[in-house]
Length: 385
Image 1 (cartoon, rainbow, N blue to C red):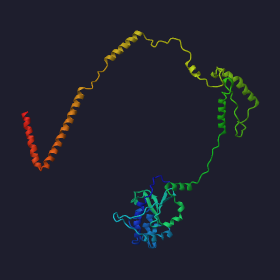
Image 2 (cartoon, one colour):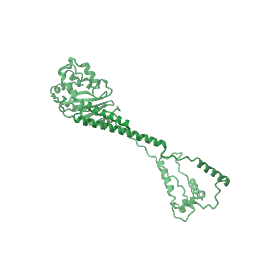
Image 3 (tube, rainbow, N blue to C red):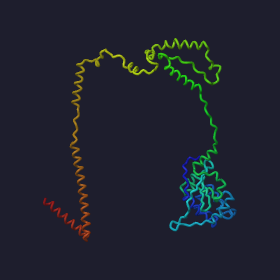
Image 4 (cartoon, helix red, strand yellow):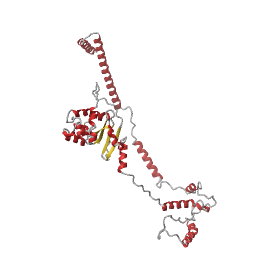
């Protein structure tokens, strides 16, 4: 199945160009050039090869748009009764909205949709095409192309194959291509569950053992699986007696230092608060602590004094926030800002004076002469200073 993104069809974009070409079937034996990019590659090749052939009958290339002779015979009457009216301003065909769109997937690479045009009684069937260089008029090399043109009543031939969405069409195809496979259940392993139950029973027996002594592990329960001759034999009486003596004599002797058995007077519980923390603290240590340094105290003092003197000598001089370089940089920045502000003020004032002069009828030459006179006066003032 194709993994590319398939965009839903837009009836306002797909159907009007096709509808505009249909009436020309009764005027010319060859289809108009605008029709070919709208067709799917296989239908485009069919129309190119067979259009103009006298065997096409009445309707010419219009009958070639349908793959069934019984369906194509209905197209001529539908197209003859078309009453197309163009918009007086835009020149586009005025069509009713096409709301009924259906989909079906024929195979893993073929996805079709049909538009139920009830206004004209037509059923154009489109197919999604990719890498169609000759059909790039609508949306590039990939898009919906006309696969067949039918009459609307021909929808009943395969109405059960169409669905309301692309996802539903894909699901319907998957259900037909891959029928439900039988489900297999993995049998539970009784042996592993029995082992877990035995472990739970063993640890739970701690609370039931008198004086909190270590309980003896009970023999393993027999598995419900059929017994084999080599590994599932039941223990003999001698073996059971041996295990019982081991649990009663040997096991308690091995666990005589069990911390749970040091306080037999407590209740039958494994929870004794504070015991763990008391053992971690232990008895206080009364021995004097060893000296931290084995070197001579005089040598240690001399070394400490030498390090202190070196630190005092090597201490860097604190930097002043108001250094001379920073002051000069800030001064230059302030002067630059002031100069820019003065220039902008002069420019604004000159424009204001020029607008004022024009408002009283003064020309540009007269304004420039006055400004030049004032500049000459300024040069005289500078000479006096």
